[in-house]
Length: 254
Ligand code: ZN
Ligand code: FE
Image (tube, rainbow, N blue to C red; front, side):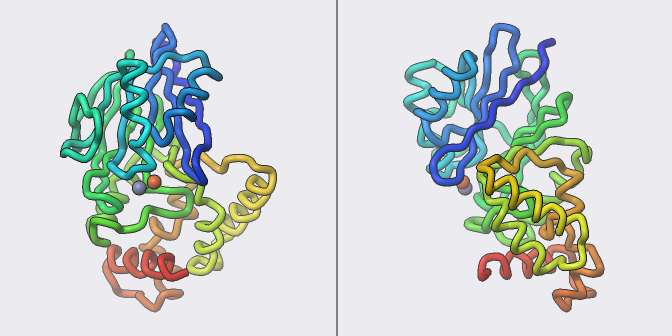
């Protein structure tokens, strides 16, 4: 079995695209299709062959390249069901598994940002693509789901092995880190991470991928059981999802 290789590239203002090469002959999957020209450029850089597009959710900045890429490459489009994904060949949902080459991929539904959101876990490779659900030190805005729904979705991701590499749909890390220190001011690992991220962004470098373990230690949206965060918010005895809702509300108004 050939090793999974991932080529991440920025596009638009703050999106990330990613190509995942899984096949011996260079077959790869594009995670979402934010911009067909950017995906084509990444294919040219890597020399890989586009055989699949794995779609996380219906927002335009994740699907607008699907149709031109499908027309040119005849690739198979796998994503959430419903009529909103253009060119969908195969609808998948929570708990479904499929294989790319010899690499098993498990589908994790993570509704909240949108209700159709799914994430792709490359089980044997310890890699997950979280779309706009989980970001470095942040999470997606609640456009369609409520806080309880999003919290349950995040719990699914928190249960993945800590070494799991997390690739996200956007480079929002610096703004997320600056907000995170306001609700988790005594977290030394978070403070260190903020300065690391400032240096990376000053140098124009990506801050992703991250890992589940790192997020569990520094992402305030995942750390709602932490007594210090609860005290900071005055929510010592609230349910986890209620603390999550308060952190989300503060970030929305930050
Ligand atoms: Zn989105
Ligand atoms: Fe997005």
